[in-house]
Image (cartoon, rainbow, N blue to C red; front, side, top):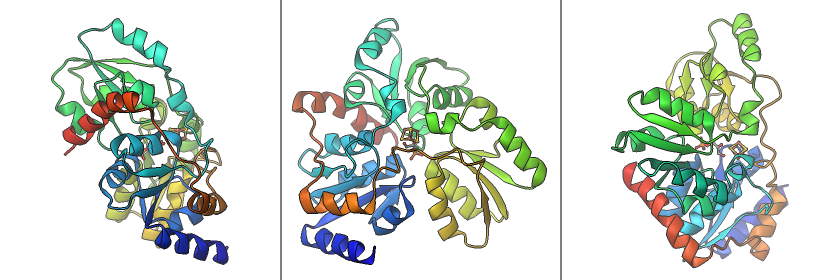
Length: 302
Ligand code: 13P
Ligand code: SF4
């Protein structure tokens, strides 16, 4: 493993590349990354970094978003089949029909969506930027896709607006059942439950804090409580433990692994740098259409 890490570092320097990693990636992949972050932060870094070669350790919609924002850069996704089942739940044709039924609504897509869908909507959001963005939207009627859980969480935050939700969800967060949280809370009554808004409502209702991956990490780092139940993909525990070696982190059973986020291995990162695997391309006409909603996201979340 040491030899592989050295080779990755050598190639990265030689090619003036930047390695970005989402919090859900394998610990060893996070450890060789230049930047680790949530989807919003990584899309910002990918857009603003001076490096022209980006190795994006995440899933396809993240690398595609980077390419849409920075077409002049080469964006590589080390594991080509690392997709997002939630993004796949909203198909271009279905979404375009759906939108037609609500001509006055503002259409919002979670960044976990395909480029084709991004090209159809008014604005994109991430879990960490959604509230700020919706705050600046005047329309009272909002179509939100694909995540019905993040959508219903946002609807609760904006009771004066009417949210119409697409029926998608994250298979990883959906696996957590409220009973397992109740069980752990009984065992450790003082435990703080930190949940991602992609969780089902019954789970969110048991949480002390609801936020994006970076929000969850910041909450645990900034508070003095000792015990935390982390209700999101388990990859985030790596940074949580690193930043808070004296605190205790628990998970709700062995259910919260996103197989797609775990597809990228160190060997894949090496091969990505060595052989330009796998270059993300987006057809220019489509890219220009999808760019609008991503640029709007960055503009409204300033
Ligand atoms: P955030 O990084 O925005 O919290 O999103 C989580 C996620 O599911 C990414 O796929
Ligand atoms: Fe998609 Fe859920 Fe995996 Fe994130 S954790 S990439 S939303 S399936």
